[in-house]
Length: 77
Image (cartoon, rainbow, N blue to C red; front, side, top):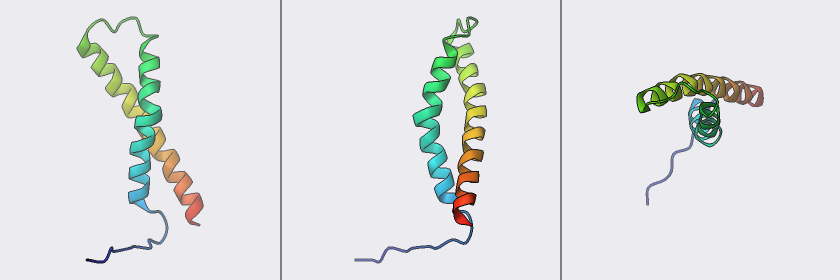
């Protein structure tokens, strides 16, 4: 059986940051976008809903990524 390779990165483990950002964005960000869309009356068509989800979701994704990175950096030191 082949051995599993392990790494011990110095500083921030960017793979962990990317994976955690993805999971948190789906678990927290998607429901937040859905709730936020309830309060926007101009979302009458599917393209409008999709554009809203992309715009708001992108901002949430960046905010989540920065928070996860700052957390990882504080724990790495």
